[in-house]
Amino acid sequence: MFTGLVEEIGEVSELNPQDATGGTSLTISLPAASTLLSDAQLGDSIAVNGVCLTATSLTPAADPKPSFTVGIAPETLRLTNLGGLSQGSRVNLERAVRADTRMGGHFVQGHVDTTAAVESVTPDGNALTFRFRPEAQDMLRYIVFKGYVTIDGTSLTVTKVDDAAGWFEVMLIAYTQEKVVVAGKKPGDTVNIEVDVLAKYAEKSMQGYMSAKVGGAGVGGEPGSEPALKSIVEKMVQNVVAQAMGAHSA
Image (tube, rainbow, N blue to C red):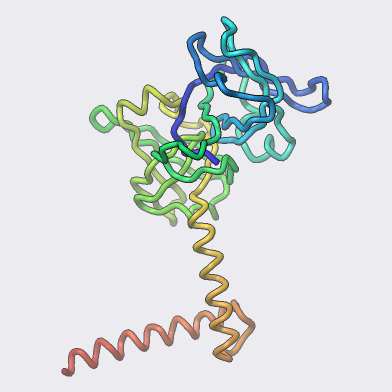
């Protein structure tokens, strides 16, 4: 579990598509004064651009050039933009939270849902408004105005969303621009997107509730079917209208 508050910006020193294990590995170098690995152990989870990865090799924090290596599974390469990294690429880094960590962002799993393309970058005073178009458009149903979204591992607030047009926006204040790699993205670049997991739980809970209501009420159609849901919505509307008319008559 992570918070979406970036601790460090690292630099890719190697993306090896065929390492000693036969898989893909990513080695990231840290600033000489970095303390990111001060209490790190092999097997620890570190979020790299919002992707939860396992540390398979660690260079001691006291080393003049601290670094660590993580393995990347084929599925991760398919769902994220990590495969597009190259030597010199800058990446957001965050260690997994501890029990005594102050929760300043939101609950981030490090499980990327889709990538998104930067559609535009618009200055607004000293802030920057970024517009993103998710590759998986169905993810937009979890992105709401003033809700949370994780972009390359950074917890940000949605400032605008247009489901019909297929995009959403966030704003980076001057301070954040200096702390995360998203600020350096240009139109056409891609980012990793993780939607708020609480939205998924809410959706699943509502689906279960609606299915139970449909099945218990004996409304025509299978539980969860369009005719059944339509019937429930119609009854809800009728109740609201009846209540409004009753109040008006009184």
